[in-house]
Length: 51
Image (cartoon, rainbow, N blue to C red; front, top):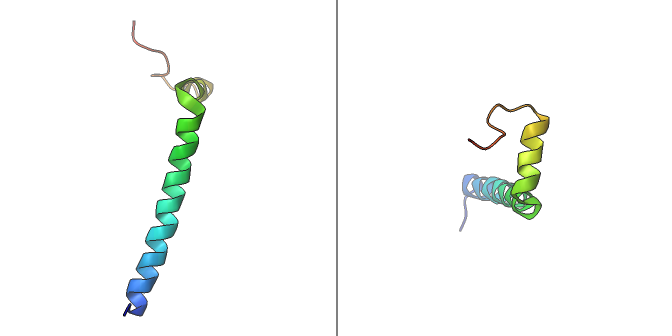
């Protein structure tokens, strides 16, 4: 039988796991070009590939 603390920890872990999964899925579906474009928009110094 689950204790109250165990049940709460289970809920938190499930919510965080689903959140991280959906966030990563959105990154993979967009592809590398989308990520590179967002870095260029933010003026990140490492946004261009090394020469």
